[in-house]
Each structure stands twice: as C-alpha cells, then as structure tokens.
Length: 320
Length: 247
Ligand SMILES: Cc1cc2nc3c(=O)[nH]c(=O)nc-3n(C[C@H](O)[C@H](O)[C@H](O)COP(=O)(O)OP(=O)(O)OC[C@H]3O[C@@H](n4cnc5c(N)ncnc54)[C@H](O)[C@@H]3O)c2cc1C
Image 1 (cartoon, rainbow over the protein chains, first blue to last red):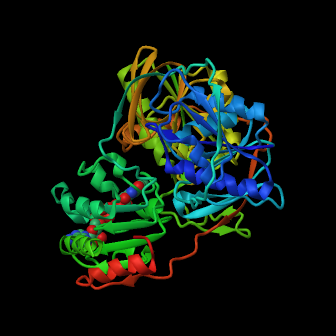
Image 2 (tube, rainbow over the protein chains, first blue to last red; image 1 turned 60 degrees about the vertical axis):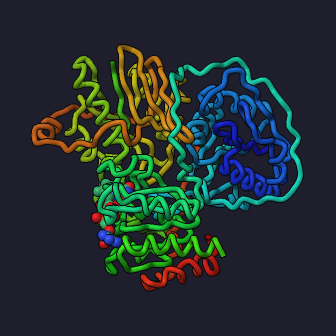
Image 3 (cartoon, helix red, strand yellow; image 1 turned 120 degrees about the horizontal axis):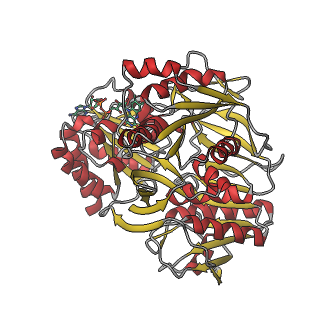
C-alpha cells in the first residue's frame, strides 16, 4: 500500500524537482497513512540520507553498473518491478524530461491510470482525483483515477518544497541485468544553462529587443537576478536565441515565481506557456500590449533605457 | 519501412477556453480545429521527409476520434502521407488512446511510430510511452533529430541539461519535438490529392476505464497590473522584494 517516489538525479545531483515530488509524497503519505519510499537509480554525489529532511523515511538505491547520462527504458522496468514487489499503489514522478519518459512506460507495465502535470494534492473523499494543468496552462481538469495502481507526474514549480529535519535510511538493491535497447552514442551538455523549468526566476525577451546583439543587457539582468533566460517564438525562429529558450504553447511551459517579460507583446500562444508564473512583470513601450492584462507589475517604457536602470537598481540593493 | 504518425485534433491556439454543462465539457462554440502542432510540425513533416528520401517508405496517419476529426485528417494528408486510419471513438484518456494505437501498431507491423511531444489541449505527454510499453517497443522521448540508415535510426533526444544522441533498431516509438523538422504549408496539389487518399474507419478495441475527467476549472483572474513609472525602477525592485516577495 506504499507510495513510491522517483528521485530525479541529473549529473550526479538530486534535482529540485525531486524535493518537490518528495514534499508532495510526504503530504500524501500524511493524508493516507501509506508509507513513502523513494527510489534512486545510478550514482549520486549528494547524500540520499538527507532527503529525510523532506519527509522521506526510506530510500532504495538501485546501483547500476553501466553509467548513463539520463534515464532509460530499463530504469522504467526496474521501477515497475520494484513497485510490484512492494505493492506500491501510487507512483510519483516529476513532470520533467525524466518523468515524461519513465512515467508512461511504468504506467503501461503496471496497467496503471496515469495523470501528468498534476498541480495539487488529490481529493481522497470519493475515490482518488487530482487536478492537472490542461489547455497549455489556460485551465485545470480534475481527473479521477479508477485503477488500483496510479501514476502521477507533478508539474515543476507547482508544489512547495517543505524542508524539516531527519535522515532517511538508505538501502541498496541490485538494479538487475536488463539493458536498454537504445545505445547511447554521445551526450552534450548545454553550456552553463540553468534548467528553465526549474528556475525560480526567468527573464525573457522578445522581438522588441530588435536583434541578438542586444541580449547583453538581458543577460546582465538575468545574472543579477540569478534567473534563467527565455525568449518568444519569433526570436528563436530567427535564431537570435537557441530553440531551448523558446517558451509558450509550442515551446516550453514554465511556472517560475517571477517571470520578467521584456519587449514581448503577450500573444495568446506566448501567454499559454507562462501564465502559471506566480508573479509577472512586463516591460513594454506600448501601453496597449496585451501582456499588461496578464501582468502583476508593469513598466510602460523603452527596454533599452529601463533594463540597464533595473539592473543597476538591483545591484544597488544587493550592495546595501 | 512503414511509418505510423499519430495525430490529434486540437482547438486552434487562439481558441477561447471555456466550459459548459457545469464545467464538465469544453465549450466548442466558435472553436476552429487544427492538427495538434507538435504532431503536424515535427512528427508528420519528418515522416514525409523520410518518404521523400526513400520512396519505398509508406506513411500512414492515425487518429483516435469521431467523424468530426475527418477534416483534420484531410488537412494532415494534404501535407503528405499515403493513407489514414481513424479509430471511431472519442479520445477520452491517454490509456484509452494508447490501447487503440497499440492495437493498430501490432496489427500493421509498423517500423516507426511517431507522436508529437504532447497535445496542446490535454498536455499529457504520455501516449507515446504508453504505446511503447504496451507493444514492448523501445521508446525515445522528446526527440529533436532523427536520421535513418537502413533499419538503424540515430536519434537525438533532449535530456536534463543537454542532449544525447543514441542508436536504435526499428521497430521503435518516438515522440517528436522542435528541431525534428521545419513546419510546412500544404500546397494546392497536396490539398487536391488529400481528398481522394484512403481514409479507413475502424471501430475501437475494448478497454477498461483507467481515468475519467470530472470537471474543468479556469485559473483565478489576475487582479490587475500595477504600473510603475519607467524612471522609478527602484520602486519595482522594492515591490518585488517587499510585496510580492519573489526577490
Ligand atoms: C500556432 C502558433 C503557435 C505559437 N506558439 C508560440 C509560442 O509557443 N511562444 C511564443 O512566444 N509565440 C508563439 N506564437 C507566436 C505568437 O503568436 C506571437 O507572434 C509571438 O509571441 C510574438 O513575439 P514577440 O512578442 O516577441 O514579438 P511582437 O509581437 O513583435 O512584439 C514585440 C513587442 O515588443 C515591444 N517593443 C518594441 N520595441 C520595444 C522597446 N524598445 N522597448 C520595449 N518594448 C518594445 C512592442 O511594443 C511589442 O509589444 C505562436 C503562433 C502560432 C500561430
């Protein structure tokens, strides 16, 4: 009857997404009384015991002989086998790159009902139903899961991380001999980029910036805020910025605490990917730009003047 | 090589999102329908490119949907593809759709099953993986590049903090995203040809219900923007720090 949570590890580090999913699992465990157990795969430089502070009491570490850059189908088989052995009822993943691979494969093998992009705790008074983000952030759907075993992926930046104290007990188990049918040739890291979906602050710029040569001031502002960079679709299409920065309905969907939009008009397709941000700041010289309707704070002004001033003001606050 | 491209009918990206029947149904009044962009721009176009490179490749399109999905299938066929299959059922949930697709995949001996990264209405990102799991085929998620050499595919996928290129033998299931291909616009010849391409309608296989959508909800509206004068940026910094508490 346990809850099994997959611990997202990338490049040997436990991801923030894992802390969120563990916090979600801990709250669910408190509501249902079902024990919460974590599963970690492969090598990890961070201490798995310390996940106890997020409410995880037990971690099963599946040691792997072959190192890998990212999860594979064989990981999904290992998770499914463990879930069956433990008779896990609820499996939790992050709605991250790993979760998008592992969760459906696991759901298929366990014949589980799956709901992805979950944003809040389930309702348990009448079966099991959860709220997920739909219509690219423009609505939510409440979905009942009717199967005995259920698989959920939790939207990044949707569930608050709760940290207390305590240590988890970590036990090691063999991973098994199953091997993915997919052979890795090489992996490339995107240089220095902060994960856009995990970032708490995102600074984004659009066509109003006029050209790629003007991104220096955007990068400076982002640096000052410790923010990840994003852009509108035409900016990526024109190759002013890399594709992986394109946010929106047909790009990446994000939900940071703070989204700063500079020289972006706020087209419906752009808003669809960013409207789950908790606070939105819009800087645009056109007072009629539709983005102001979706914003919390706005400055009607020329980005080329406002941005350097904003960066300077932030520097001043930091210095004082 | 036989390719199956899974396509979904979704509301246009500018559609107004509203609900009826006590918020249990999507309000389709005035809604224009399109082929889900991830399916059309990336999965379908890449399949067409593979066929252009090797005329022995066949490309079949598949959708799970009722008769009102036919215009969408014709729209997709106008871009390319040899024929289409429609499974005559409402696509109620990911597991249901995946079961239907899996039945066709097993039956049709497809070598490559392509889906888009997700649909822009349900945002599930799970049908590709579910189909792979059920058909016991390898699954590569969120692929940005796919190159074929005989029966070997070299695929680039997005991973945490970067990308990975890998090799796999067909048959395989791949979910496609940006980078895989460049979106195309159908030409007149394509549109004419699409009218007479075969569209086979098949009845769904039986499955159990895994999940059921109970109700929809719209997010709380924003309370309105607070405007700050452009020469008062320090005030914005103060508000973000003290009021919004995000910096
Ligand atoms: C099917 C479909 C899917 C789409 N998906 C996406 C998506 O995922 N993401 C996305 O972003 N778009 C998407 N789009 C495109 C979208 O409709 C808009 O065209 C796009 O978002 C506009 O980008 P923009 O705001 O950067 O540029 P523009 O619309 O050109 O806006 C530029 C803004 O900059 C302001 N500006 C100009 N100069 C200055 C200055 N000096 N200082 C301050 N402000 C200035 C202008 O007032 C204007 O508001 C999609 C479109 C379609 C049809």
